[in-house]
Image 1 (cartoon, rainbow, N blue to C red):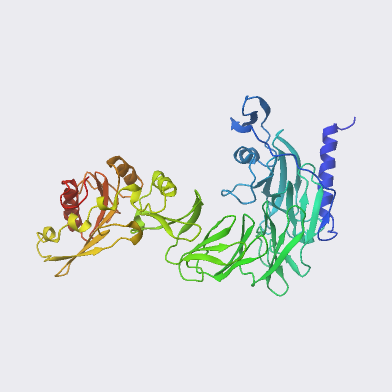
Image 2 (tube, one colour):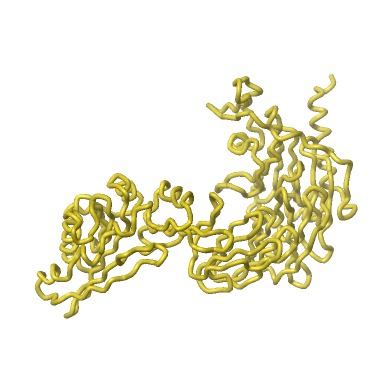
Amino acid sequence: MSPPRHRLRSALALAVIAAALLAVPAGAPASRPRTVEPSPIAGIRVSKKDGIVSARVSGTGRVLWKSAWEGDSPDAFDVLVEKFGKSMNVGEDRGEGEPNTASTGRHLVIETTSGSGNPHRPDDRRRITVIDALTGLRTWSVLSGYAGDGPARPFFHLVGAAAGKVLVEVPALRTIRALDPRDGTVVWETALPGDCVSASLPRAGENVVRSYSLADERLAVAMGRCEDRHTTLTGLDPATGRVRWRHRLPPPGDPELVLDEGVSFVTFPGAITVVDGSGLVLADALVHYPPSRMVTDEAVILSGDGPGDLAGVRSISRSSGRVVWSRPEVSGEVGVAAGKIYVRSGGVNPWLGDGLTVLEPADGRTLVTLSAPLTEEDIEAALAAPPGWGERGGVPATAWPDPCALLPPAELVSRAGTGRYAATPIPAPPEMRLTTPLSCELTPARGGTPVTVTVVCAYASAGKAAKGMEELPSEGEAPDVAEHAGYFDAAEDAVILREGRVIVTVEAFGDRALLRHAGRIVSGRLREPDPAGKGNP
């Protein structure tokens, strides 16, 4: 009896793919007849319930397909549901233990690791599976050899999906290949430099395979280790395989490669190199810690923390490589939203969480500065605010209480043995445009514990202040200080409290009794009417 026709077709497809991955590269690049990837899917919703994945037409709810197939990739459909219809690349949004995934918008590509069961052999065999999201069917799947097997049964790994193709690296053959997602045939192949080996292969004495070849819609990059102990980074056109540029970098050490919107970030211990998709080097600097980064169409934004050549926030033009502006005094996690640059960083008191600084992309000037605690509403308001909006949540600066008025030095003298206290106001950052100090430090004349009062925030209403209070960490309530109060930690010598629309902190490190005494005074003053400029709760 003849085997079923679909099995013959499946076996033929696997044979074609295996032959494609084993073939010795013919040149750089060698192109095959051009294929056209089916259009990305729109208007279809994929969901999973009780282990069954289904695809429906969004407008009518008509079912296109249902499947419970798990196959060789048990997480395949979970990833399909999450990433359906999106263009994404290897490593993006990947949680611990999840498979590598990529998507052309029509086909989902999943790479899983298959263990050898041998503790003396690298656990690095890879299976690449392609699923057609329109039908839910697997179009092809192929299993690699191990990293040490050589060209007879080569190891290969997923580079990404770009230009309607599945990109793989075959390190033993020193080549990058683009495969047709419909049948796995080779569309193009490009050989890497002859004096270099793929950086993805384990070094002598190691058994770890790292992904040092990546791709997105703008660029494919491959890293190699060369005979002169340098590293080479090669940029390829993902549509054709043509080599766009090649850069030699310092000795490899233990680098990390990230590709973001066609920009390559190569981080070495103590150094970073940033290369645009055009091949222009945007940064080559010594750093203490890897900087936070953000890529736009026009610029690369870097934010370095600590000593080094990239301290602070700077904007580098992608077209010229020139530093357009820099703010060395601002640092933190950087991002872009609503056409503005924002930086999340430690505020006046890092215990309270991150503050927010919003910058103008064109020149880096500060538009808004917010201190912690931050709610999602605060962040949205700051990003939507017009230039010059600098007061927290739109509350006028004159409505913020004076911390020195909340704890008059004379009221602390009532504690025996402390003597007179001297109050030292601590100004707020100029961007906050406050007319009062942000903090007040009270120091006893005859030794003892200083007390510090800081106005965390004055909100527009008590309701918003209560929501802001929920964002702050605390270790146990402090009802003996105020109704809405919590201690910083188990030491109970620093407290955060809310009265009405105002949140403040009171610190008397090492002296619990003094902390409670000062906290009650501050709480009581905040509950009073506002004739002395303390802020109306």
